[in-house]
Image (cartoon, rainbow, N blue to C red; front, side):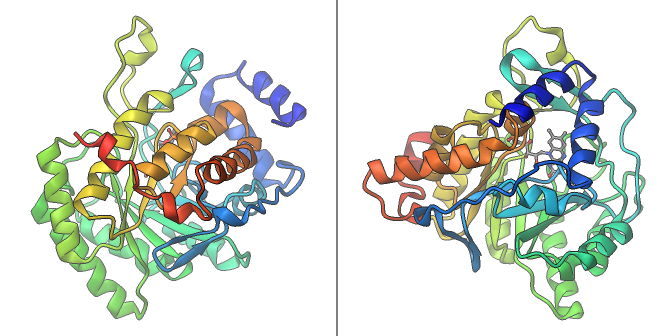
Length: 354
Ligand SMILES: Cc1cc2nc3c(=O)[nH]c(=O)nc-3n(C[C@H](O)[C@H](O)[C@H](O)COP(=O)(O)O)c2cc1C
């Protein structure tokens, strides 16, 4: 990690988690941070997410740039793709603060942000101005008081879908009061059909990725995958944060919300491997949850991920981690005799099946 970044993170850790997050976000938005652009040149990391070409497998998941304010700065970190949002049709403030908590000893976070964002119109106008070359995913959700959550997804697509390289359906957020569970087979099928019709109406066909919870029971996960395959989903994102907790006396674990960071690693990797197995490796999966080293990244690839995302580890270790993981991953592939990362996808998924 760059020394300056290391000291800044230590300094920011003196403040409440959301305040620190907002400061580093503003610095990125103003172009002050990262100061220099990181280049990732390892040829063996070039990969594909379906039809989308990626210069390397690392991306940032939804939740970090909820309002598309820091696209340029975040691409300077060396990532090849950035997922924005989650975006809802109307702006919403999210849950009351405090709603973001650090567990510094284990480099984890608990959040119950509640899909705070500036709304589809504002985010669409930011995306319209973006002319860079990085791959943009758009995470879609519905407003807290929505009368028609299905229509909310369609409204976000109408407003912003054209600017995205792929659409990510956030049906697994643990931080909104889910009166409607969009992961039931009936609701999921309805949602996917409506999205497909809407895209036809609008004259585009963006790949649709489904973001999964790590907390589904195995039978529920199987149902979700079956419906997704029937309705022609293009890929999966495994996974969102978990509502489960480690055995610990630390009172912070009693905070409501989704836990992210190292504790999530095994749980999300099991979900990833199960999805890979059930889809027979035919659909791309973005592996996310607890990645903080090159070894973690390699493990997720071998469990079935075509591309990767990380968030919590960046909060603790800084954006220099992207380059470090890419360099390490490239060496690990070389050591095992792979000429390209795609050759390693899924080769050890059976070790993670439950
Ligand atoms: C503060 C915070 C906000 C998040 N907001 C969203 C969100 O809006 N939509 C979403 O799909 N996931 C959201 N996530 C989940 C992340 O996208 C990711 O799935 C999760 O953090 C696991 O990865 P990690 O262990 O590398 O952090 C959020 C995570 C955090 C920590």
